[in-house]
Length: 372
Image (cartoon, rainbow, N blue to C red; front, side, top):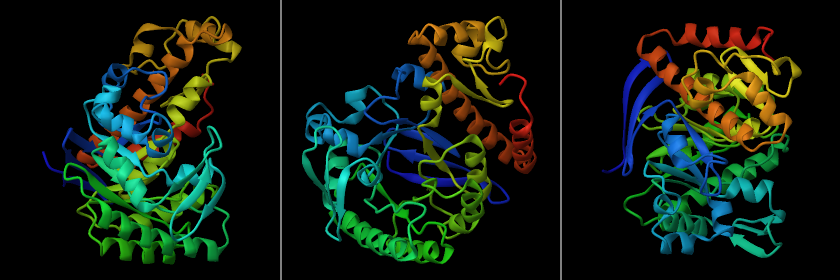
């Protein structure tokens, strides 16, 4: 199966699409659970699949450090290595270089940095990012970009835009794997003129898909939400649009309302490991003593294994005694909730009521939650 994307329904800017990849079809808008190091933390591939995941994300930076792209290729590629037979998207590793690596030196050639694992000196160029992702064998590979912090001065943001455009050219020229497509990444912070300029240059290169990078890196949620409609409109309607590393449930719905098709974030599993659950009624903190004797499920209407099987009292107990099952069950629920949110969004778009659905969700999340 080759890569393709088809728009099926619209409800204002919000859209439902179908993306075909060599490892299966993905219905959009879609949330991609993050499998940073060839695993969605705490969950087996079967658990992730049963929760409703269509596509997951792998991290090039972490996998390049351990176990190494060459070893993954030797063992049959990332799908076989982690026993996930569905589509996989890999990021380029650029964000982790800029956020995790110590003393990173960024030039037009690429990034030189010290590994956060052992301090060894490494280099990531556009060509190297392409080669590693081709070794991993993901269905969708991201080009290398420079992601400036949200409070970066204008000249730094402009330099990152220029560099990201040049790096995208080099990634496209170096890519040879026929069963893998590349998505480009638009930078520019909250400067809409720079975003439009970057998008214009990248769209002219005719990538199969486009991402908005450099959001949720320090700017306020309100600033991001305000910028998203204009930024999404700069991207081709007939190709998938991906908002990278975002975020909270309300951020996902703001993205869908703006015409974004794809999302990823570590929040579901990170919050799950810390006893915090996402629900349609708002955030629930299971360490709170009010749950100690509560026989109710975490979320009554949730069909996930956690909510079908266990009480809030039991979940509270697991976290009180530091049993590893607590983080596993809450991570599973949170992943299932994010996937259900996208599934419900798709249904609302098809039925022409996404604006009402969006407003209902926001009202539920803003209401003081007795369960919290």
